[in-house]
Length: 145
Length: 82
Image (tube, rainbow over all chains, first blue to last red; front, side, top):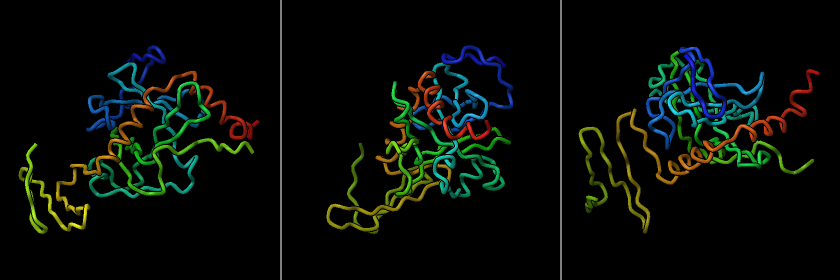
């Protein structure tokens, strides 16, 4: 299929790469279908592009690239909602906020991970209440050293 | 809004599947228990709103800022292979 996007023009996407979210992202309940696009080969940041709203795309990343010990435990209800046989079926991403014109201040939301079962083409945003994880975790060290 | 008065140990039922219990009251704090189906997410409102607000902020990302962000990483990370 050809996917119309505001940021990248028309992007050809295989149907099987489309991910379905039963509840959408929090605050975006109406958008239920997304694809992951890679801006550059082997880049650390990806786009999570809405299939149904051309202008809606989020930057996501793999949290362990920045927080080595980031670990989630999944409840049975999360596993079953994502049709996962075990945690091994699930990939975890986090949403990245890049303030306009200030990419050096980008942060990742470790409290609201995006959990994906690629095999089942399902995704869900969880809310993690863990004092170690911030919703604005800086991705770049700011000490300048 | 429906307003109900409850004592410790009393409950409120919502539909067939949700039960909210008053477990304890200490000063200005109330401990509530919520029983609900597994597929119904339950969160403290301020946490839910924080995630929602962060999502809205994240949705405003621009491609030129993402390119610059990738350049900021690509120093030590990508040059290892060169």
